[in-house]
Length: 158
Image (cartoon, rainbow, N blue to C red):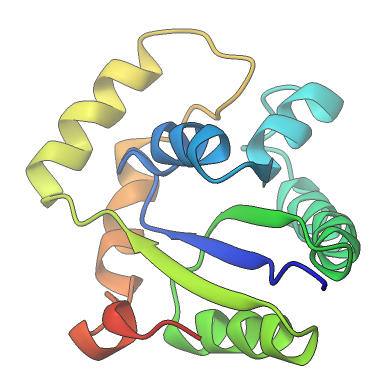
């Protein structure tokens, strides 16, 4: 009998703790963790201010989904550490998992704006090979844009 794999969607803004939780879940759930920022920094360095950044990030997410899709087909749990800021995007990936015969779970890290900005300052004060330097000016509109998951979305296991 084939294992039913689970697609774990890490939902939250930068500095909310997504990757930290994803690393924990990776071991607890025997899952393949796919974090685009780690791949992008390794391939292109701190390119957040470069015009090609967003296009590169989109390509990396597409490539990581292709890896995730195959892993789910093989019965391996997968963690996509993409942020999933919009409900529509979360629903799209949940549907993708369902079509593959996998279940899905949303893991949301709800952090106040003040705490996000405090963590951002700490993160920016340290060089990293895993995450990007993000200006506070960039972060503030993202906080407004972000669509928090509703309670029903968080409780749903598919």
